[in-house]
Image 1 (cartoon, one colour):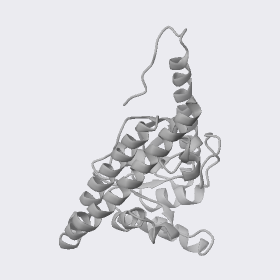
Image 2 (cartoon, one colour):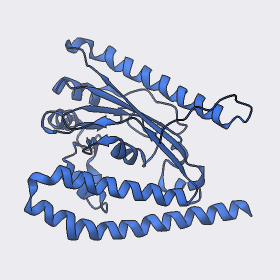
Image 3 (cartoon, one colour):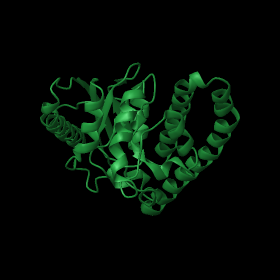
Image 4 (cartoon, helix red, strand yellow):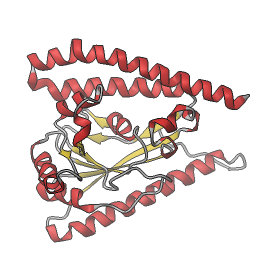
Length: 270
């Protein structure tokens, strides 16, 4: 019976998210886009306010389904930064959206998401996200990433694993995109490490399993890239090592918090 109730609760929370998308579409078309067309210089502010509003409500509704979501740290985006994150779920970008202050960073994404995806495609275009097409145009990917690093004023987010982890472990980095970002412009690097979202990696995974989401995402940094480009591969290896260490620390704290015999409980942030 409890399984059935959890499943129904999960479906209900996703129906609320679907209703939010319909409401969010009206807000986007009737308020955000007209303001953007009249005041294009305000686009980063507008899309940041809109995306943060949507992200908060999405997580609020997932909480109705039993999800537990926590964040700690922040990423300053008043000036250019590179944000390196691990990739477990479709919800990772929402976590980074809420950790970034005051602006939402652009993110390296596949070209197909820039069209015909409700709300997402327009946000991608307003942010000016670097678009890549690894299969259709593999040679054009790195120039697009470099150009994004040079022109975007509030940072670029990249998932150097290349695709979502199926078991939550941090995969080996595909370094070409991150190398292109760091070579194009020497800016501070922030790391964002999350755990607990990999069981909901796809939408179908979410359908009856919202209650299994127990997510903790932490932002930390900055890390200064080396002045010598030849040292960048070693620097990238160091970034991955720090991320692996952090995800292990997150899991250790969560295990201790779940242990009723533990002498103390360490908070992971809010």
